[in-house]
Length: 187
Ligand code: NI
Image (cartoon, rainbow, N blue to C red; front, side, top):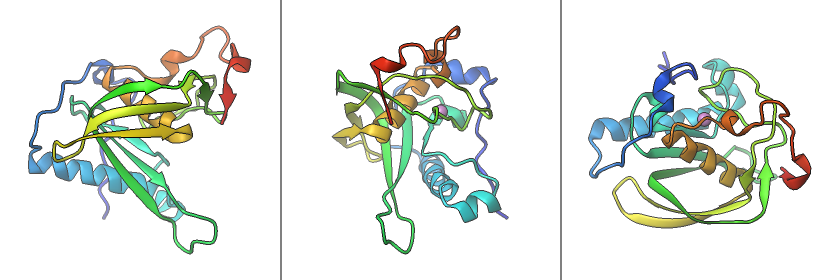
């Protein structure tokens, strides 16, 4: 029997907390949770498992969504190329992330942004930088820098928002969810 992660729902006030900096090393228990989060995101992106375990597809998860008030998040990117027989994925882990530079150009997810803590469709435009450079620490406490673009840039900005108690729909104009659409590039 597969035991799913317990992901907080949007009504849970803990999602509005500002998370605390991570200090290293991680306890084994927390490392296991991080691994499990990556595994579950991967499974959620494979149709067979997403159906079998009733997992909503997602590519990112922040610690606070698991009730852990710390500044870390994971991303799992599908890297399958045309012609590959099996789906492939790449895991990313970020602790204490900081966006050190970002593009002028703004984009938005045309299909709408989703969140594993938000069990409903929310329409509207969430403007995000098309490219961001992030400085962060890996799971062993080693500093690294990475440049992300397009959907990975959106995902990272979405997760960093979680560390600051922000949900994606906070960025959507309540009266006109598609306001200023022309200013941004849909992806
Ligand atoms: Ni989210």
